[in-house]
Length: 85
Image (tube, rainbow, N blue to C red):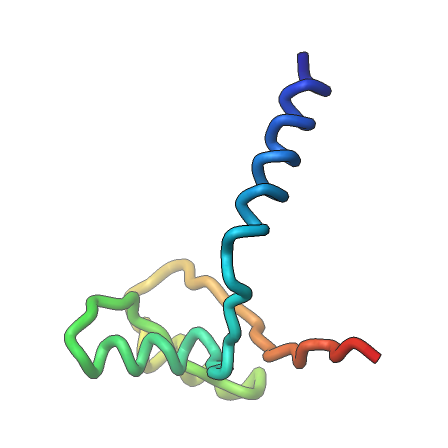
């Protein structure tokens, strides 16, 4: 049963891919940049701050999240796509 389901899903995905045009992404932004942009145009986004050092993390937690007992940290990089040779 599981093998049949896997074949069905794989076949459906390959069939769907034939009719779809390849999506090109020309804009690379970090999550914090996208959040700033959406916030500027009225979209509700979670509170956050971008930092680049451990010292900045400590300062941000104290100044931006003074009453929070726990915060989440997220590391982000933009990976360049590999070109076919």
